[in-house]
Length: 370
Image 1 (cartoon, helix red, strand yellow):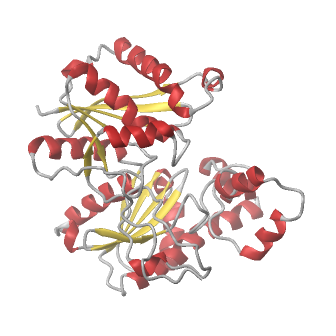
Image 2 (cartoon, one colour; image 1 turned 60 degrees about the vertical axis):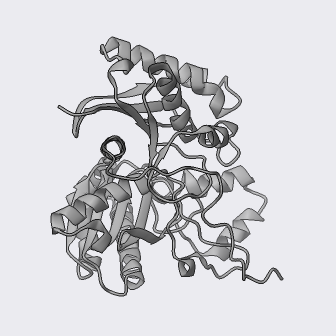
Image 3 (tube, rainbow, N blue to C red; image 1 turned 45 degrees about the vertical axis):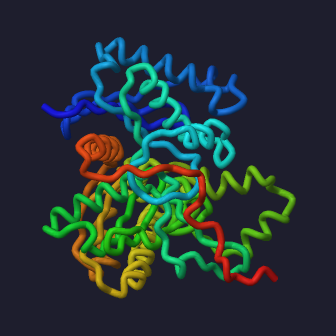
């Protein structure tokens, strides 16, 4: 028996919930929210009372009492860039998230929901390794266009959790490991973890990196510019092509790996080529991040739902298996990461950080303006 931790992660039309007794998950649910009701809200933060109500109905149906919890932890975006770590939910977090100033996405509801629960129960609420965390080295921020800097937008929570687990399996502290971690799920992020910090990674929000199931990843720029000025596409159309309808979905009309593999079995040569290219693209980036780590890589860590696909993993290894041994943690461990972070906070094993709203990085002070 240990601390009871309530964790959650809001999505577009649902909210993932889990309860842990120590490290053991004793309850999980994915609460669905009525899409027609969600459409009635002009701003994401206006969904808060409705989401709380549907969550509470789910907990009541499963006889779960929030007052039995020792702490709450959530996945929550919408913050200024910050360090990794554990942050008690404070007024500045709530201000930035509720305003939607930096992001209008359901992720901004995470901190707001657990704050409501904390207020009701008198128990602490934490954010653990929020998605806005940024540990990039300066050299990784430079792009080839003046005024455009590479930013850290990756699956920090799951990236860090599987990196911790990989380090443990290697018998080394995370702070002494060099790892390349690939989160391949609905989205895809790849990052170089150097001695306990994520020093470089693809910007999943701005179209960087390998193609993903429904994101384009990097593509040659001039053809995209021509698309923008063709008169055939609006700004929203182009954003959707890059961030929602690209990658496997755009090329094959589906991002369901089981469906794609069925098409390959039935002789679909285009599906087979795209399937191989998906792995090939990722492998190229694994090689590039091996360069970031100066060739000193302890392991390549694969995680996310697609990492359950042995054929995909085999294809990636075909091109990048020389880099380092592969360690597989298929699926995602975000809820486990939230729970373990909250437990570390309660046990005093990790110092708590204060979110101030001041970005850890905005620009180089020495960069010429003209």
